[in-house]
Amino acid sequence: MILDKGFILQFLASGLAVALLVGLAAWARIARPMTPLVEARARVLLDEEFPGEVLDQVWVAVDGRGVLARSGDRALILCEVGDAYVARDLAWSEALAAPFRDGVVHLTLKDITAPRARLALANWPPVGDAA
Image 1 (cartoon, rainbow, N blue to C red):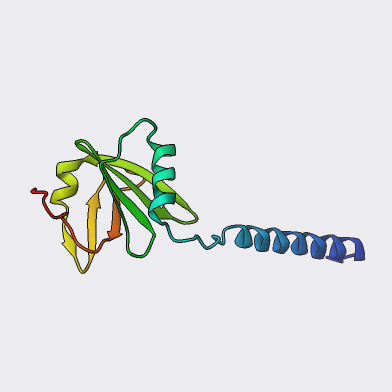
Image 2: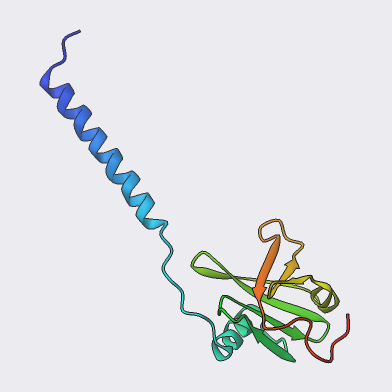
């Protein structure tokens, strides 16, 4: 089979286009670094995700990568995933019963898209709360 110049040029141009698209896709998946959360920003995000909820107490993770808040008998959770935060909630009693190992509380969420949250907190459960 004899290859002509047109076929070779088209083949090389197609290969280059595919390589550029693969490079663009890889670059687009790079997450931008997030600024660690502070309590004021955490309260704003919680208000956006859970409008109308009255926050009794807010605990920001020591590394700024998540938040746990109490609103009555519910625990409101924000945890960092990639370059955004995921918001979930669960019963306060479940949050209190969550295991706390090596400075990290391990919360089991009943959501297939976010099955668990790990928040680095100074201590858990909070002083004065009983499981």
